Amino acid sequence: MRSLLVILCFSIVGRVVFAQNIEGPWNSTLEYSGTTLEFQIDISKVDTGYLVSMSVPKQSPQAFDASTVIYEDSSLFFEIAVMGVKYDGKVINEKLIEGTYYQSGREIEMNLTPGAVTLNRPQDPKKPYPYREEEIAFKNAKAEITLRGTMTLPKDDSNRYPAVILISGSGPEDRNEQIFGHKPFLVIADHLTRNGIAVLRYDERGVGESEGVYDGSTTYDLKEDVMAGIEYLRSRDDIDLDAIGIIGHSEGGVIGPMIAAEDPTIQFVVMLAGPAMKMNELMLLQKELIERKMGIDEPMIATGQKTMSEAYDIIIATEPGDTTLDSKLRAHFDQAYNGAVKEEQIDQIVQQIGNPWMATFLRIDPMDYLPNVKCPVLALNGDKDLQVPAENLAYLKDILRQNGNKKVKIITMNDVNHLFQTCETGLPGEYAQIDETFSPLALNIMSEWILKQVK
Image 1: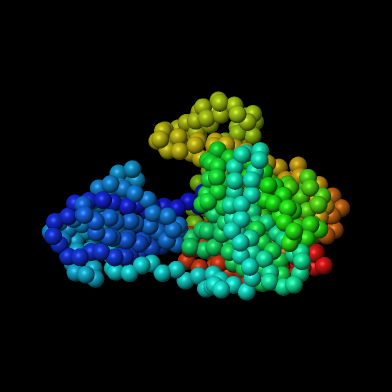
Image 2: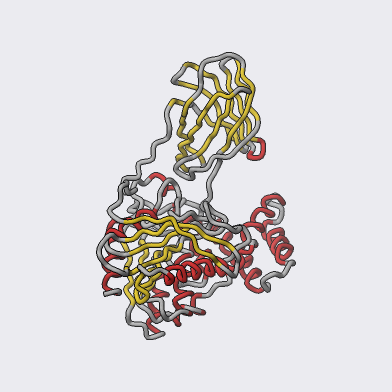
């Protein structure tokens, strides 16, 4: 979920004295904090010296800028002060730069070899597609922003097609829900459209080509964006107005049912790891399961559960917009950690859990909307999902059974993680290392079930 953020990318401008030609892509693989990271460094020469961009392609395609580099007498040094990163290397020849990577007091051998990092993503569809693809835009009038995305439509002779809108998980996501070099929404859209279903996917506000600002937005703001997308689908002559549904992943699996509970014209909802537990309870369970899988000691897990549970209680008891929230949380953590954690680290924790999105998310209780969902629901979870664990489905089943909705299909998939990849451990550190983007079985389950709903 939102905590799965990109680590480390930058560009550097520096001065140069004559040395070996180092232009071109370089790469290195490091073991860092229990995760294997493949760095790519692209070097090009300009009048003032060299430009260098560094990225971790399996985590994000984005590269960021830094400012200091020295390259002379075949020695290469660069620094990105804001991240506390330094690299000190020696150009051995055109096929090797030997050096050391420094960050947060760590020293790691980092040898660079020529070539770009290659991502094996066999499910990414290749053009030309056997369907139509359109770049589209729709407006959220309430927020006064325009969101842009892609529509894919079948090429058959139908005048109107069943359609779905895809809602991504937490964090600023592009139209493909790109993460760790994977593009799950591109893969889903390709599969569904080949099976006769039109698909709308879009860049979230402030991301890619969409207007607006993501920072500071809440689940309810993002819900308004989705509703604007649904209205866009209804405005098209080639969409069957009686066959519009929603597919939501993770946080999107919260937003989809929220909309369906309010809008009886939504024909179906697919919840991909969509939470049915209270969000504060879910976040605690997620933390516990991931830490246990990582081998953290049980007493430490228990202490962390108590500390964070009390912090979440403070957030839930504090009215939205109350400016005293940060000070309440700071006081709580000061007492809980009793000097064992530095003040700047406590500040980071407070910012992470007290920001508008997280504070709002923690207050959400699915019992406020799930009982009002009357349309067909397909809910999928992986049994190795550590972020929205499969036991979440038991809550969903109970809630929908109580509301009398019998048009519900609930499936727990074996050896599948939060991203719906076939996996070994389910740990987030494994996501980037898996070639599979989205379980083919899950794709088939979705398309077959949707086509039955829109007959």
